[in-house]
Length: 420
Ligand code: SF4
Image (cartoon, rainbow, N blue to C red; front, top):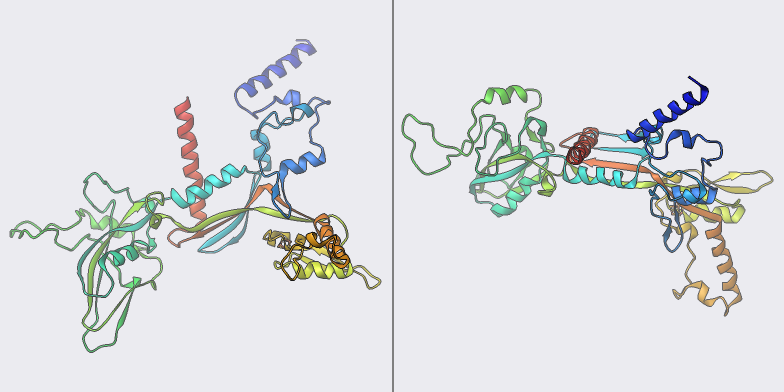
């Protein structure tokens, strides 16, 4: 085979890869040609990768995803799977039982937002859905008490349960966890506070009789659940029996002689149906802040800059001969309050700029403040997200994120199946 045959077959193979979706975008043999510029000019690279935060409004907020956006410059802007795999990173910064902060680098804002929405609304948990009140002589109304019970995070793995059958199916050990609450404040004794630790798990299911019909001697009275095998559930939860995650949530206060007796049934659900099933207190992200000093800020101006920033982003370093210079020490802490580039308002509240022509002293201040905007560039990195997940405690935050990834993966697979 000749040399030209070899190179043609290589191109064919690459084209084949391309048509198979390997790499995506423009084929490698075109991208590897010498005269194809690999990078954008600096100012366009800045617009593509950073949000510029000016005093009045942010600029260049759109992610530029169109593959031909820079075609005139000969730069390929298509999404390439190999680039994504090379650039994508997750770095965990803080991790406790209740929250996690990590950086997701090299991802589109739409994907970061998809994770946020899935975490809030689509990762399932167990929550109290039905409350059967046998007696409530406390001051708190039945419906308010039921609502409070619904919001208690339940420590039980939702993967061990099925969704309830809302079409009239039975409530059994596969879809229901039953808790009992029976508290009584004895007459002559001080008031008592009823907390979530008063909820006791009933592994055998409901104990309340479901209707008034008298059971005959042979048959068992009908309750609100039909548990068949409590041994299974006992074994399943031997190490970690279902219970409220926090045992000190106040539910009610009882005066002497008052009593509450009820059963609370927890079922599996998602936050999209009701916020009580949402596994997170909050899930949010922000783009990585970038604070750049465009010129040296020295002496009094350096001190002024340090004192202006409430987030302690700047510090002062000694540069010899009694001179000091401001430097950025903690850009990640920047909250984008823009205080460092803001102009001061005059005592009467008017903008200094308006007084520029009337008063020479004010004019000096205006010039100085205008300099701040030129001296400091506040930016956000468009594909670097600082992600924070605060769990309600029912599910560990790292598990929550893993579940969110699986849910997004399932969705993608469904779309691919539908399209193919
Ligand atoms: S925007 Fe606010 S937090 Fe950020 S550097 Fe400026 S003053 Fe500090």
